[in-house]
Length: 339
Image (spheres, rainbow, N blue to C red):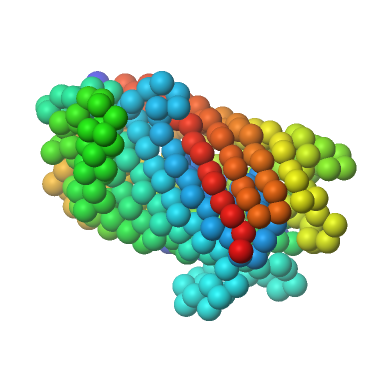
């Protein structure tokens, strides 16, 4: 096994065009392209995170501290806004928007950071994940078909991976405040490069038992300079729930439920491991041959919603993403409000 700064296969798509009319379509599409299909670190758009309002703001913070670790996906945050005026966002013409469906439009700022296990070492840790950080501006559309009980989500991320994403400054600052080990290895991080990613996700409700239980199937396809991958899975909600696939009439004002989600991920490219598409000057990357092409992910948590407030605590377990790596665990909190 050899790890280090290796030539990378850059032949992956920069954009994706996807038309789907049924859950079977996305399943077939994923299976048809196994070599060009990672796990989503921040995902606010699943139905179990739906907020029954056309106007809301939500803050998300992930950290591996919640799982008692300090490596791999070390932390991430997002600031998310959904509002009617965002229907005029010029980027929306890129999104799939079937007629006769309910539509919501939003934007978000997302930041993600990754480290190897020994953050106090200034040297390259061969065989471990490289230091990496990315920051992105995201535009998205949530399209709900109330007749078919389905949701179609399109999004575009534009940003930067590398020192310009200030991953070092953020982690060092937090560790100084909390009195933890100061990270010394960020000088070896993935170098600056463009983030341009497009994603399409489809989710369909399979079964619902009144306002107590629901079962959904989901599939996603992502392509671009940060991630090229696909996923397919199932999610459930149990408790006091509303439907994210029906009209807003007679919705309960108080919700409290648990959710779980199982995903299988087919991995094509991951710039946080392999380096950016255009800049090959990163001091250390994971070679293409060392990437684990199929991973499994389990997400679970609790959600409390009132008419105006949203609270969530979640946990995630992800199988190893490269041959010499370890499984990844992290937790997250989300706080939102409608307006």
